[in-house]
Image: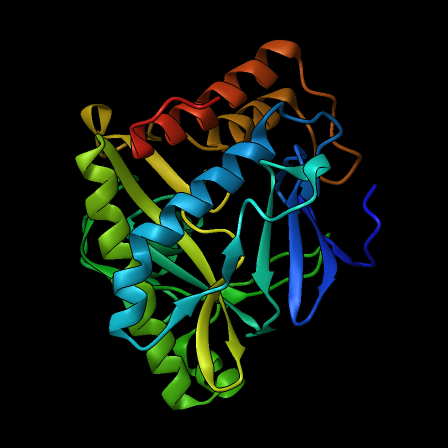
Length: 285
């Protein structure tokens, strides 16, 4: 427990009022899937998410600066000792009400919609794509930002423009795709395919700011590049392994989710740690 006012509690993070237009984001070891928080934590998960986000904020600063934007991280070290390693001191932002999703490969819900309509919302795609196919160009497929327990819903670009204004919507699309392209380049150099990811943005006055977490196994699909093979579900360094286990367990996604077996916990942790180590080139401690 921290001696700070609790502002919000999400599926994974607690957000505390740190005063002077600052918030403290604390990443727990909770894990969610299919819009439910599972009863079994994944050891070290919060530390991986925090360390990887901090690393990516540094990598993406030049891209943000080229758009006149910035990120919200103030410090990952000037935090209370009890949450050191899993907390970030950040700027308090007015968050925009959309999730900015970039896809460079067809997977997940994108595959389902493509097979039904030949597009993802208002983004038409070429015929003949399969699960895992690389797209001709990365695409922007935003969604709503749901409350805990609710579902994110894919939306078209017009809905983003209606929510934030046309000029800001265009800025979000261009910046999201630029961040994805740079992240995908860095990941591929580390032997990882960045299939898709989501970003969240807020405003600090009139200025656009990248917030929340960034390019983590919770917010992205990471595939080992040497094993990428379109036409089937891909091996991954994210929580897709956990989703697959939940599906095979027979859970109906309505009743409370099941406890995770020890081997599933360890295999999930291993995937998160592997993503961190491969991307950053440093061991996780």
